Image (cartoon, rainbow, N blue to C red; front, side):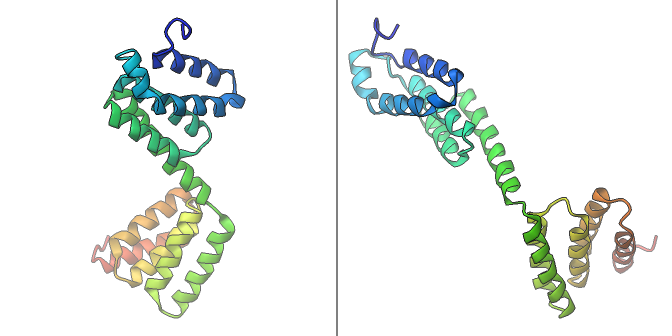
Length: 203
């Protein structure tokens, strides 16, 4: 098909799809081909009007984005989807961009998890708490939770700091999260009772 009509992006894009299916070793070749197509778009279009239409160029950008996504290079993938949307505001690219942004956020959160660093921040938070520097304690617990979001005791610690800062509704939210992660966390129940008491909810 390419030999018959060398000035149509569709055929090159389809060949790139086949290369992707053939395996990871072809990814660089796909990116190289796609970049070359984008750089020659006007030349291709003048030789064959519509051969490099906005819609076809958008599909080439989406093809590059899919490679970057597979490599977990989400920032580059997002950029390629955005370029695709600049060419043609199609539903496929919009949906793909939204999914990619979600995957990027999830990947970044998971990459950020580090239990040892979480523990170091928790200890710093405890020191600040002992020194009655509630705001600094809360900031350390915030960071600890980002580093280890499934650790129940961190939410209980932050709730204690929030209670001292008179942020009772936030403290209750943290205690509920703590008990969701560990229903047997006894200290959370007493802290929850105290927060309700301070909020004048005597029940």
